[in-house]
Length: 162
Image (tube, rainbow, N blue to C red):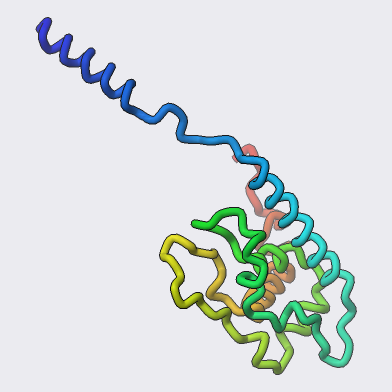
């Protein structure tokens, strides 16, 4: 029994000594700077799109830039994982008139999906990169139109208490 106890204590000490000290590291100054720049960038685009008044089926150039995420890759917070900047911008758009114009547009350019990098690493995944700007705008429009039926503003949405 004494030997089993000593072995158990020895294993505990070895595990404690060789385990990682701290697996969560604080964000560095550069990461915080990138997050702040990205937040300002996203808000600037969203504000511009929210104030846009569609006319004669002319849409802002943002909707025609299928490789927008790759063009602005310096604003991604992580090399290994990130969310599409197009998605983050569209999620802040509340201009229903503009979104309807996008969905009703006959342009094939807005339905074009982003090109994937030829030597893309499987670790460099950008969530929502496989969606065209048309699809993102369509999903956002559906979300806004159904906000009171299915979203957080719906009368049957559970409150924080359960």
